[in-house]
Amino acid sequence: MNENHTETGAGGMTAPGAGGTTDSARGPVPATDATGAAGDDAYDVLVVGAGPVGLTTAIQLGARGWRVGLVERWPHPYPLPRAVVFDHEVARILASLGLTDALSTFSEPATDYEWRNGTGETLLRLAFEDTGHSGWPTMNIFTQPQLEGALEAQAHRTADVDVLRGWEAVDLVEDASGVSLTVAESTGDEPVLRSGVRRCRTLRAHFVVGCDGANSFVRSRMTTTMTDRGFQHDWLVLDVLPHDRNRVFAPRNLQICDPTRPTTAVSGGPGRRRWEFMLLPGESSAEFGSAENAWRLLADWDVHPGNATLERHTVYTFRARWAEDWREGRLLLAGDAAHQMPPFAGQGMCSGIRDAANLTWKLDLVLSGQADATLLDTYTTERSQHLRHAIELSVFLGGIICEPDPAAASQRDARMLADRQAGRDPLADMPPQMLTGGLLRQGADGAPEAPAGQLGCQGRVRFRGRTGLFDQAVGTGFALLATEDPRAVLDEEILGWCERLGMHLLRVTGDPAAKGPADVVDLDGTYRTHLERCGQGALLIRPDHYVFGGASRTEQMPGLVAALRRGLVPSATAAVPAR
Image (cartoon, rainbow, N blue to C red; front, side, top):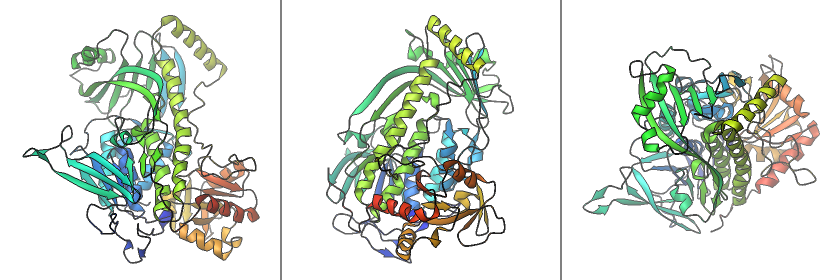
């Protein structure tokens, strides 16, 4: 989606409404309740929870033309920082929501990350690229309240999204035709009482997505079980505003693996800093988390009330757990409602926004009747694989960082120093941008056929007079990128289906003079290099930027598109099975 532009349908096509009809002048028809009557409390999708994941989910669905109710029990956004890291893939997703220009106002490239032991020896040093695989800096440090403010403003600008703040979900009933969600007026902690009676509303939708955190109400109404990895550590988290915004901290992001007090000192976004100190066995959370203790710990960094403001001090318990099933009938989970992980790989919020990117295009196709409801089952399959790897990596890193035993820490230091001297990187296996099952082109053995499941790249292009990163110049949605014009080998029937799906059919070229309707000028050779490395003449990219499959020769493109069509199982009467 371009800045200040609302797209409708998959890849820019207008999607039919819940009733299966479309008014070409107005877009989707209004959502209807079980009786068929339109109303202010009838939606296509209800999203519970207006954090970054819920807001992303609502914006992506609303931009595709669906009526979305975003339910949030807190009347006002949470004003203090929490997550501080997002990667290049999430930056691309946020930009596609219309935040391209806003990102630089609340985030900055991470640039570096250094690990030291208790004696100051460097165990590991990472340098992050300014331009990562997705066209944005590889790692970014940001301020969450400002991100949420930008997302909520975008949600209000999206015509089909209603932001319902101050309403708490208190009951939920699913039936064969939809979900009824009862919400009560709320001040956040407690519903508002008027003469002893709660003011309530009953909202109606085809689907409900729970983005409502670790204590999810939506998850409580599902039968899914939680798997706990058994990792648990308490850390004091401090957010600080240095009075001198130009003060240099080198390295910018530092991890101290000291068994006497594991410590993190990183950027908190432009003009901010964050420190985290692990509680040791026997220490009291209440005493350790006090402002007095916070300043005592910060004094070692020459940070004190005379040169800084302590914005927040709180003790967090880092956990690692996930729900086994993220979809049950018409109920779905995303973000912390589906999983929680330690922060050491910086993948907590990132994983939730990936959830939204994976789920929303699938809901769009199911609601519009272009895919069978079973497509939603691939959501758990695809995201849980990626998520569990991220959790295992976070736990692995946490095991290195949180080591309180001096003897074990000494062995760790010796191993990491030897790795560094030999040029080995123990963190080279970061969370893979890779899917290993779900809606991917499969080979003869039933397994995904490379390069299916890989994360597609993004580079600068020129397309029909517009220059910029691919999403901003071309748009979002399905894309068939090829060295030859796909239209030359696709028959009329398949071309019609691609058009209805909103698929971009594109010829990638290095010729700066190319001006054909399908020509995308690859300004930096990003796509041509990527195709060559994959050994492919064409790649079919999904709306969440993952590769559905590839074709090594031009004449194989019809089979590639046909495989996607079979996977979606289009049906005008796609039914949603009851629980």
